[in-house]
Length: 147
Image 1 (cartoon, helix red, strand yellow):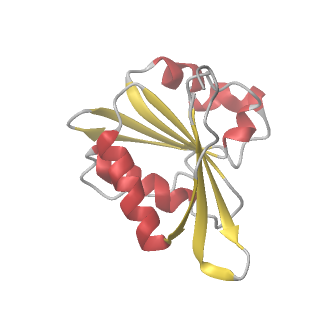
Image 2: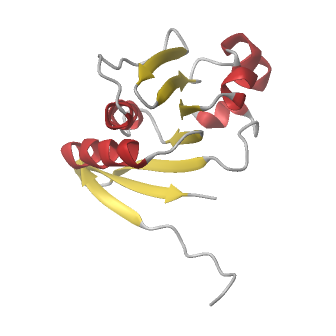
């Protein structure tokens, strides 16, 4: 049917599968691209962010920016900005992390806890929703919502 969007697929992945999927996603990502990682604590957002960065070409260690709020990495294909908005009080704090500059960059921008941005994500963002699977602590569900 023309004009009808397909519902997003949901995958069930082990942590190793999640990392492999993220590396493939990073390899296939063209810039500029903004990726929003949604999910509860421990759902795998940072694991996926690390894998996406590795796949994009980041050679060094990728660490969680929970306390720094943002980490910047260089890759052969361009800059990568990994933001963790968990500690922000709300959208008014975005200026403190350089939000507007990141949204204008020709870069790969990976955002954990995007709901803290209060609707300030651009329409073209790729949303990846991660969740625990009840009764299976070793697996996560992954759902992509793309524009």
